[in-house]
Length: 249
Ligand code: FPP
Image 1 (cartoon, rainbow, N blue to C red):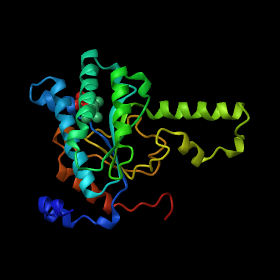
Image 2 (cartoon, helix red, strand yellow):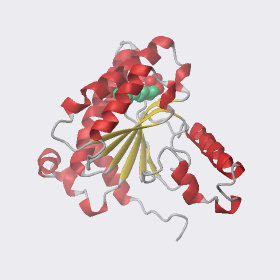
Image 3 (cartoon, protein in one colour):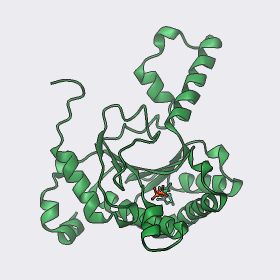
Image 4 (cartoon, protein in one colour):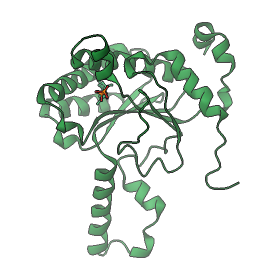
C-alpha cells in the first residue's frame, strides 16, 4: 500500500481502501489499432498488450483486489487469421511459463476459465501446471478467460442441468439462480463488480453474460497497450463513485 501512496500520491488519496471492488474484469481491446497507428504488425500490439497485462496484475495485487479476470481469447477469436491466433496462443504460453518468475514473492493465484479442451496439448499442460502450482495462494486471483464465451458457458450449464434432471438427480423446482451460478466456470468466483473495456468500444462481446447482471461498466477511450497503473487506480476510483442499487431504490 505504501508503494501505491508513493507512486500515485494524490490519486491514491481518492481511493477508499475500505470500499474496494472485490472483482474487476477486463476486456483488453485495441491491441490491433495500437499497432496500426504505429505502422506495426498486429502481433506487436498483442505483445504490448501482454506487457500491459503484466503491470495491471501487479497493481491489482498491490491495491488489494481479490479477483482480476482478463478476456484473453474468446470462442469467436478463432475466426481471426491463423497467424494471429498462433501469436496469441504463443503469448499465452509464454505468459504462463514466465508467470512464476515474474510473480515471484507475490501471492497471486492463476486460474483459467473457458473451454480449455479446445487449446493445444502444450497449453493445456501449462495451464494445469501453473494452476496447480499456485492453487494454495491467497492473494489476487488472476482469472484468464481462454476460449471463453458467455453463451457457450450458459449452453454447457443448461446441458449439465438437463442431464441431472434426466438422470433423476435433480428436480426442476430446484433450478434457481444459485444452482446456475454454481454450474458456471466461475462457480467459486464472485460476480464482477466492474468490467473495464478499453478502446472506446461499447459492447460486452459475450463476456461473463450471466455474471454481469449487476456489474458496473467503465469504457475508457485508450487502447489496451496504453492502459497503465494510474488508469487502473482511476477505474477503482470511478467504481467507488457509483451507487449500486441492484434494482432497489
Ligand atoms: C483485443 O484487441 C485483444 C485480444 C483479442 C487479445 C487480448 C490478449 C492479450 C491482452 C494478450 C494475451 C493474454 C494473455 C493472458 C497473455 P484487438 O486485437 O481486437 O484490437 P483491435 O480491435 O484494435 O483490432
